[in-house]
Length: 268
Image (cartoon, rainbow, N blue to C red; front, top):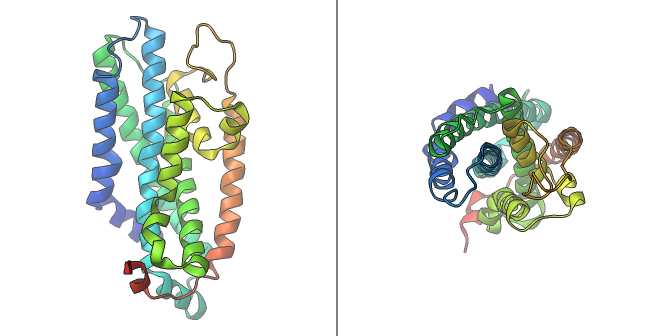
């Protein structure tokens, strides 16, 4: 019931459609029409470039869910604390419902980003840059939505219970900050392989790239000259482990959520 209500409210949320969809479409447009002007006229370069943009924007789009999730828990901390004690609502049902709804939204967002990436990059390149594994893209979007919910719920409950709500605005943006940090660093500066494999943010982004590109993601952006590639199967296993760990932590923390005054978060 809670998951269904949250799903409906999020799909009607103008901030989600503004920042999670329209703003991301702006960056896909920039990637297709502005940042590809000096690209070699070769299909493999255009498709890899489209895949990288899809991976980055798909990850960032999913991260916009975290802010809404954080404020939902922040505003409902007192209600949750009493509901878990005196009603039939259980932490497991609450977490499961939100995981389902955020997974669905993550899949919807990835589908929109996938479609627009295909349309815009195919138009500018002159090649039909069809996504190779679109079903993997949707599954990766679902996993990204679930991961962002779990991470956001853990962060906001830690602030609510132990660190105080005065910095709740900062706490709500931590997942998005980490998303930008890992996403842009990997493709613009480069990261060592152990971070690329170990970070759930790069795992999600690279799985998106792989699903569009159809080949293993190169460790560096020189697929024709460098034989070192990232193994997406390993990344999927590591991402699954991260989700299971965060799920366990979220169950343990949310059941101990403390009722706090939301006015604390409005103090400067």
